[in-house]
Length: 333
Ligand code: 5GP
Ligand code: MN
Image 1 (cartoon, rainbow, N blue to C red):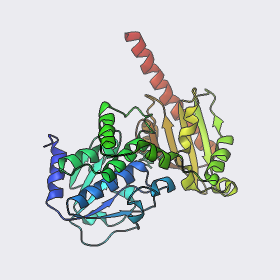
Image 2 (tube, rainbow, N blue to C red):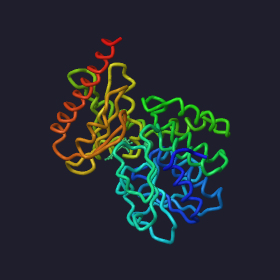
Image 3 (cartoon, rainbow, N blue to C red):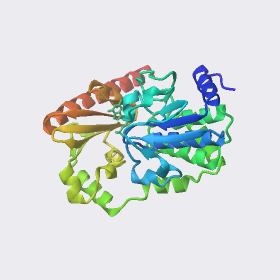
C-alpha cells in the first residue's frame, strides 16, 4: 500500500463510491485525455460507473485513441454522481464545465499553483505528466495495468514531456513507460498516431505560420503568430496548430518560443515553450496564466506588436536568469 497520504485517501474514497464523472481542462491535450481515460478504464475494471465530460473535443490525432469518442462534450454536467474526479486542472474553472462543484471533488494535478479546490487534493509538481500520478493511483487501487490503461498513461507521458524533451522527466518516468510497454503498449503505434497523422491543410498551416516567424534581437527567441485569416487561407484550423510551437525549438540557437493565436479582435492565446532551465511558467504567471517550466500559457489583450515586445522582454529576462544560474554553477565547479 502506498505511503503517500493524499493518494491513500483518494484510493479509499474511490473504493467507497460507485458513480463517477471525470473531467479535465478545456482544449484538452494528450495528458488530460490520457489521464482521464486511463482513470475511466481503471474505474470500470473495478465495476464502477465512469462518465467523461469535457468542454472541448480532443485534437484530431488524440481522437484515434481507445474510448476518446465516448467523451461527452458539454458546457455543464448534471446527474447523480458520488464524486467528480478532476485531472490536470490547477483550478476548477480550467474545466470550463459548470456544475462539477456540486459533487465530491477529487483533484489530481501536477500544475504549479494548484488551488486545492477539491474535497480531496493530490498535487505533485514533480510528476512529468498527470498520467504518472494516475499510474500510481491505478496501482494503489490494485487494478491490473491493462493495455488500454497503459496506452493512455503512455500517451499522457509522451505528449506532456514534449516527446521526452522537457526537464520534468525523471527516472520514474521511464520506469512507468517500461511497465506500460510490458503491459503491451506499442510505442511506435502511439507515436505514429500522435505525430504522423497530419492532413495536408495542417502541414500548409505550419508552413504559413513558420514562414511568418520572427526572431528576437538576441537570436534566441522565436515569435510565431496566427490569426483566423491565415488559418482560412492555408486550409487548416486552430486545432491543427497542436504541436506547431515545438518546431522552432528544433533550431539549435532557439531557446524559447512564444506563439500568439488570435481568439478574436485583439484577444490572444499565448503559448510558450523553453529549453532546459528557462522558467517560462514564471512569465505566464505574470499574465494570469500558468503551466510548467518548459511549457506554459496565458491569455492577453492588446495590439500584437506591443504584446510581442512585452512578452519577448520578459522571456529575454528569463533566459538571462538561467544564463546567470549556469554561470554560477560553472564557477562553483
Ligand atoms: P499550451 O501552450 O499547450 O496551451 O499549454 C502549455 C501548458 O501551460 C499546459 O500545461 C497548460 O495546462 C498550461 N496553460 C496554458 N494556458 C494556461 C492558462 O491560461 N492558465 C493556466 N493556469 N495554465 C495554462
Ligand atoms: Mn499535464
